[in-house]
Amino acid sequence: MIYLDLNHWYALGDALAGAPQRPDHVAIFNQLRGLVDRGEIAFPLSAVHYMELAENPRDAHRERAADAMALLSRFITMAPEWTILDEELARQLNHQFGRPAFPMKVLKFGVGAGFAFGQAQRMVLEGITEGNRREFESRMGASVSEIEKSANATAEYWVLRGPTAALRSAIPTYDPYAARRIADNQLAELNVMINTLRTVPDVASRPMDAICARQFYFDMEDHYIRALLSAGFTKNRTPFHSKADFTNFLMAPTSPTTRCSWPAARTTSTKPGASNAPAYPETPRRAPGRRPRGGGASHRNGRDVHRSPVSWSRC
Image (cartoon, one colour):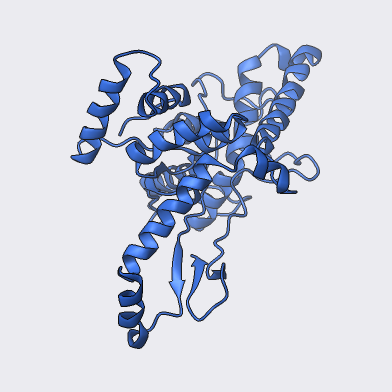
């Protein structure tokens, strides 16, 4: 698996379109395509690719990059980080306490934009029975599975490429910068911590404590609570009875986000006046209206796209 930043996809898209940024880019693209065709390498996409490509207002640039992505990635996508966090925390609880007995396993790679955003979906034909399948396939000149595969590939391509500028203006609710605004809100939350470091002397004296605690409370707390519940613990009845136990737990998983980048020496609470308090969660209140990161994902199975005896659905 090879992850390419978006600027490389733009370069490969230009090479595919016959306008390479450098003369050797065409040969490089052809070599990579051959390796993909032989199944020797894969170039997965992430949610970031979809979000950053959507922000580009230039149709030609998006089209070229999407063409290269479609050929080289085959729409293989990476699981979002928050789903992997859930697995790592559950597995670490199992390793230390034998609970949960069967920790969840998360697919790290799947297919499509839905998988990249945590809601794996694909279109399927509804209304096909064994009695009419043969007649339907004969009229269409392809099997149902082939038709579904082609339709899903086309849908994935247009999700990746995005609507043209003319279509964007005609879609009232289309917002290519929605993800950017979420990032801006997260930056604003981070600035609150920076201002606290500047104005609260007790916190300013140990900035790493503030940074690590913020990462736990804002990025990990929901996942931590879900892992506790899956292991039969509760939010208020945890298996950790000291700051050292809890810190060791957070340091054990392999994911840098799961580990919180907590230095072993930084194990005190960041609450002013509580420098000797344990590091395990004391559950501060969330900002009003703040949606937990990665929470609330649900699958919309069987939503009709075209109402007819044979119809498309997302599942």
